[in-house]
Structure formats: C-alpha cells, structure tokens
Amino acid sequence: MGSLGRDVARAVGERLGYRVVWRELINQAARRAGQPELALAAIDELGLLGLAPPTAAIESYTRAVAAVMEELVAAGNVVIVGRAGQIILRGRPDVLHVRVVAPLPIRIARIADQQGVSLDAARAQVEASDRSRRAYLKRFHHCDWDDPDLYDLIINTERIDVSIAADMICAAVRAGAPAATSSSAALGETAL
Image (cartoon, rainbow, N blue to C red; front, top):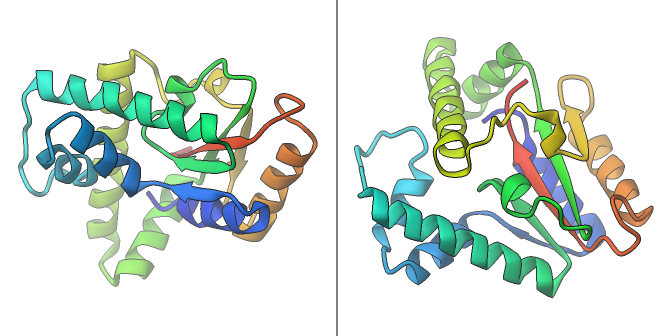
C-alpha cells in the first residue's frame, strides 16, 4: 500500500498491451472456490469488515487463486498484481517477478495525500495492510515477503517514478528476462 505498484502495473500493461489483473482474479477465484464472500474478505485487507472465513474456505480459495493464475499465465500477455504470484508462479521461466517498494514514511505520505486523511490514519492503514499481506504469505505459502530471492527485479519508487519503473520492467520483458519468451509479469506491491 502506497508503493505505487498498481500504477506501475497499469503503465506496464499499457506499454506492452498486456491485460492487468488484480481484483478480478480475487472474484474469479472466490467463485471457483464456491465462496463468493471470500472475494470481499480478500479485498478487505485492512480487516475493517471483520470477516473471518473458515480455514477450509480460505484454503479452497488459495488453491483457486493458484489455478486462475496458472491459466492467465498460460494464456500469456498478462500483468498479475499481488495475491502471492511471486510464490505461486515461482520457477516458471516465462514469468518476471517484480517487487515495487518504497520506504514507510513515503508510503504513509502518499496514502494520506490520496485519501485526504491524517498521517496517523494513513500509517494505521499502511501498517495494517503490511501485516495482512505478510501474514497471508506466511500462513498459506510459508514464505517471507521480504525474501529477495522471490523476485527478479525490485524497484524502489521513492526516487524512481511510475513511468521509469514501467520502462525498466518493459525493458526486462523485451530483453527476455528471465527467459527468452517471457510473456507475463507478476508484480508485488510491498514495503521496503
């Protein structure tokens, strides 16, 4: 939250002519898992709605997310934002894993500005989002989101703007990173 990962993903999608997938992935996976309320719970990363689906439902949803991601990547020309793509799609030679980061104070200021809230309120949102994302990866994928080995490219948007970040990612994709036929990118929007 606040690292501009979604903005970078949209810019990459526009430049490469790729489809950008974020919330629609959540909705599709929730429908497949037979748990439409999980879409709302997954989107509610701050826990403001107090939704607590049973573990079995969450595990079913997690499997459905993986299946949807695999199908999207197989179809090609897609940018997937979040939802543990760096883990689910790990080892695929046709996927470039990118982490978009920014220092906490920068992310807090961005959220305060975007949402017109106080710095304290923005801090609470950013920290809750970080906790939720970190816990999701730990609980369901047994991974630490700070592990640099999960990513091919890490971009800090403190001094690199969205346009330059998108150019860097597009250059990596066009150059064939990580493989000669890279056709998809999985972007993670995370904290530094």
